[in-house]
Image 1 (cartoon, rainbow, N blue to C red):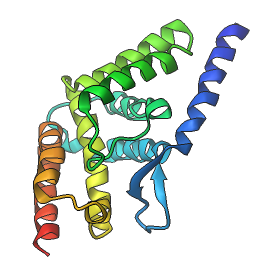
Image 2 (image 1 turned 90 degrees about the horizontal axis):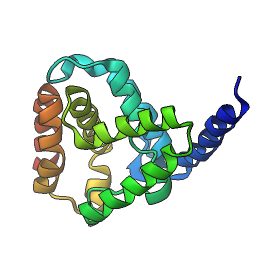
Image 3 (image 1 turned 30 degrees about the vertical axis):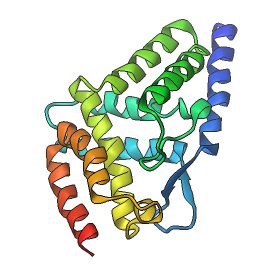
Length: 192
C-alpha cells in the first residue's frame, strides 16, 4: 500500500466532511430543520437508484449515482445557490470550477481526474446519464416544496413562472415522465 496515496484520499474525505455544514434552503419533509448538502446528495443517489426507469433514454445508474454524490462537493467552497437567490449563473459557474479543481485536486491524480471529469460531465448535461442526474437534482427540491405546502417557494415569493422555467426544461430533458407528474403537482399548488 502506498501511504502517500492513502493520505491524499483520507485528506479529501476529511475535507468533504464539511459538506455536512452547508445548509440548503430546502427543509426536511418534517420541517424540523433545513437539509444540508451532504443529505441532499445522498437523497439524490437514492432517487437515482429507485427512479432510473423514468430516464429519457438508457442510463447507467451507477454512473448517475456517482455524479450525484460528487455534484455538490463544490458547495464546500461556494455554498448553495437557490432559485430565489438572485445570483449570477456565470459567477456561480466560475466559482464552482475553481472549487472543483481545488477539491478534486486533493486526490491522487488518477482519481482526481476521474472525479473532475464526472463532475464536468454532470455540469454540461449532454450525456443521458448527466441529463438524468440533472433532472433528479431539480426534481428532489421541487418535491420538497410540493410536500411541504410550498416550502421555500412560499417563503420567498417564488412564482409559477419561476418554477416552470427553473425546473421544467431540465426535468423534461432528462426525465419527461417525471416532469409530466410535476406539472400536475405544480399546477395544483399554484391554483390554491
